[in-house]
Image: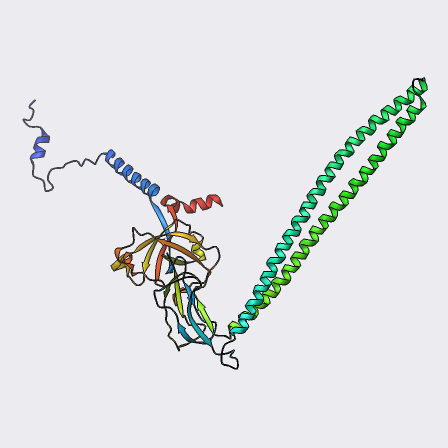
Length: 414
């Protein structure tokens, strides 16, 4: 049998084909897919574990002095008579700043009613002197009554101890009397000795009754002293109330006269005079800012006004991003600060104008500047009291896994 020189497979492979040679495709190893999936899952796990989501709120605020500014306004319509200080001048508390004349309350001579004010001041000082004298006398009387109370209490304690000793003496005397009775019956003692023992016993009992009467008397005296002390306290309160009422009436009368008299407006605190915006002869009213006094060693801070929906999440120590309206943050950057205090009661926004109008309660938040992070332009003294700004408050920091799993956690809690 003849066998072919070439195998049939070789002949078939040598023929021309339109599609070329057939090559079997080998897929990538399963380890590569597994590694990629594990890497992606690991990256997602790190992102969910280490990543965080910050809930923020933007609020409005104003630059202000940390110790505030004393703003002086007249009590009513008035004319400025004299300006006694200049802007930038340092003044002490109570120093006169300027004098004004009100449009009412003139006497026949055209002068103010300073004499009546002086008389009221004298009456007020007299009442204060009477009050001090009454307090001193009351303190002296109370101290005397307390000393008497202490002395009587000590006397009562001493008498009670004597009464105990007297009771012991009576017990011994009774024992001696009973022994004498037995001896008389036995003929070992005379009747005279028995009568002597009986007389001694009666004397002891009489002394005990006298001692008991003294104790009762001292206790009654102690009760009387306590009643006197209570009565003295009530009388002192009544006298103090009467004097306080008269002083209040004088203060009200003085305040009424002040509204009708020539006034000297003084600095309520020590500091530097600023915003002296009036001149002699100028007419002003109660809404006119005459002058302002900036306290010494005063520093600028930020006062933010957070709505009730955000105030509950603000805590001292939180960082705040500050964006000043006068310095666009796109050009000058932003400032930063730290929350130092959060109001516990709602406070109307001050110094924000129309932008401070709110439909819900606002809470004041005080923020101290972080000097190391405020730009050099701000450090150069460009910030001024009253400048408005916006601030970003971080209300809540949560992990990403808590955010993604929140529906599941809520369902589990419910």
